[in-house]
Length: 74
Image (cartoon, rainbow, N blue to C red; front, side):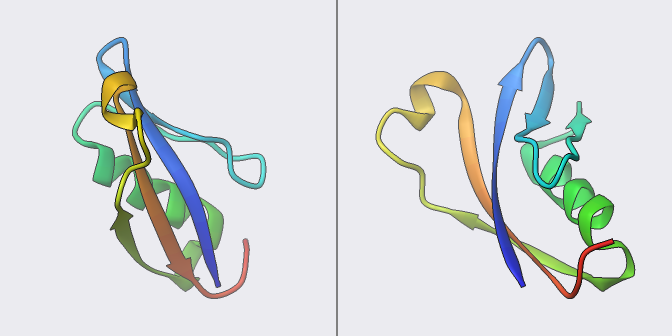
């Protein structure tokens, strides 16, 4: 199963979009925020993240896009 999320840099932290009622913030990196969201959503079924190409204007507002891959939802 794959889900998409966005990560936005805001006020010193990378904050993910809300996916299935869950959201994560991280001060380390956008990729780490997406990875932690994957663990929160999929639990032990989390596999990996994959960064997507951004859409027009994403860079201007500090957004990166990821696909989170896992099996089943916690």
